Image (cartoon, rainbow, N blue to C red; front, side):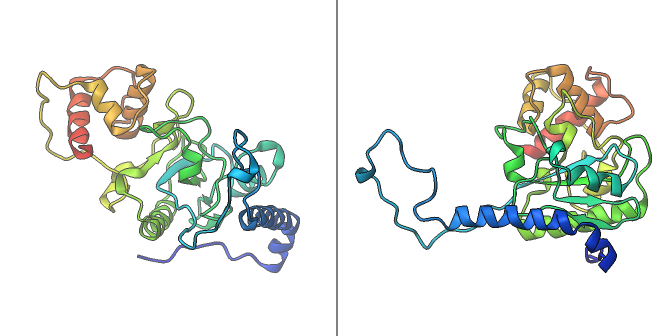
Length: 266
């Protein structure tokens, strides 16, 4: 697998973002100081007296690692525009990586830090996806084809991250999967091509008609979808796995796809 084609900033480009990088470093230092404080700051138990609680540092700990990869499209005109969005405090949004149309990758948040890319979301029982995932923004307005060089870079990046953090294939999903009521990204994404490289699930070429006892709603929930708004969950499922028809109704063909995928999650 080829290495990740990270953008190598020239001196001029580095100077262009010098102020932002300084703020990044200051915030990272603040988090570092919080982690080094003993006892930990603001982690006492208020219902107990201070002489009844103690801190003794264990030597057995590590940094929390991500368990999901969430793909997005930027819905913007260029990588530069997305970078500007992610370095403005007022937007309160970010992602770990941005993959340009030319295949170049910009790393914007340390993998071990929490980026603000998922928002209000749910997948299975997980309701704070920002805290356990890596966000990858793909430079695309949402209605244009993804270039081969761009998809190859996305695959190289995912290959690196899944191996490094031991992220299961089934945990490579889209923003619309985890936030079906409000998000459509990454729209028209080639999930099948991704699955052929071992990232994200896809259904088999030969499908079976499910038994009469098959519960489609339960299957969607087992896969991970939030079925509290069933039409939205069905649309998100079809946006990912069908794409040619995203109406919020399961056809027989859709149900066969769902049944096939459901068995992969059991």
